[in-house]
Image: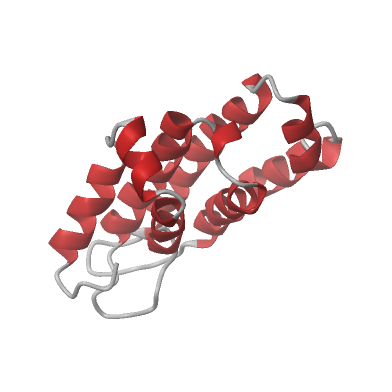
Length: 146
């Protein structure tokens, strides 16, 4: 996660998204935490929006591969909060508004994450996440409209 070479961090973030369930389980729960940390801007010179975008994409893929019911409640909330934080990425560099790449990917990933939650057969998981309340979706809609 802390490698100075952005190509290395981008590469392993992309690789985590295509790991098999067996590999993800082997590295779990650390892999979810690392991906979540890589989704958020670190305010460093070596910080890269493309890496954050790939981390967001891989985070939701990893959760889908593992199965949302197979990650802890704390990690489910961490993923949700991380995807919301992606909406606040307004990084700008010589290429312009590169934070928009992360914001866009966060919206796509959050929609997929909601789908994972709502299609889960575990009703307790939905209640635990608050997915049975209107407030759960109101927050997404208000963030989406800003």
